[in-house]
Image 1 (cartoon, rainbow, N blue to C red):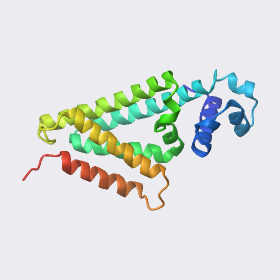
Image 2 (image 1 turned 120 degrees about the vertical axis):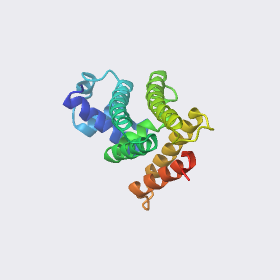
Image 3 (image 1 turned 90 degrees about the vertical axis):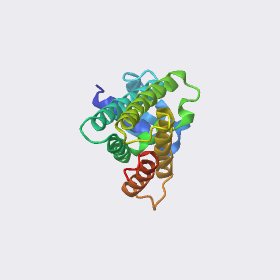
Image 4 (image 1 turned 135 degrees about the horizontal axis):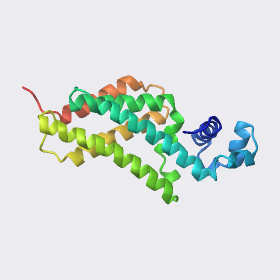
Length: 195
């Protein structure tokens, strides 16, 4: 569990990345934003990589809970997938700066530890989606002719592209409507027709 000061440091780091880019994430800039000394930050984190790891760990905890909560219950696998979509977007809406880290390739390109962390998160989330797709195929709700792995790529790739569109700041973007429309399109492609 992070301390209040650690959460403050993570929040300031996210704000800097979102507003100024990863290249401006420095201990000096974080200390200036919070109004504490650089040594005070080093008492909580070894360096900026350890701050980014802490941010990814927070996201992993949040997304694991979200995926677990929405993949349980008595609704159909397609409905569970839709609820995961909606839940992720609500989480990103509450903390838009998190998107700048999670979906930023430049953050991870040269840092093997960060690449490993994000890969673990993506693999966990993809495995939940793959399991729901396989359940839907078994129950006859989702098309069995397409490999569950490819359907998972289609679903996660669509989510990623929608997040990108939202992240670009399109003023006409209505999150609730866009998520509903995108998932409706995905559902119509993957669902088995009941006629």
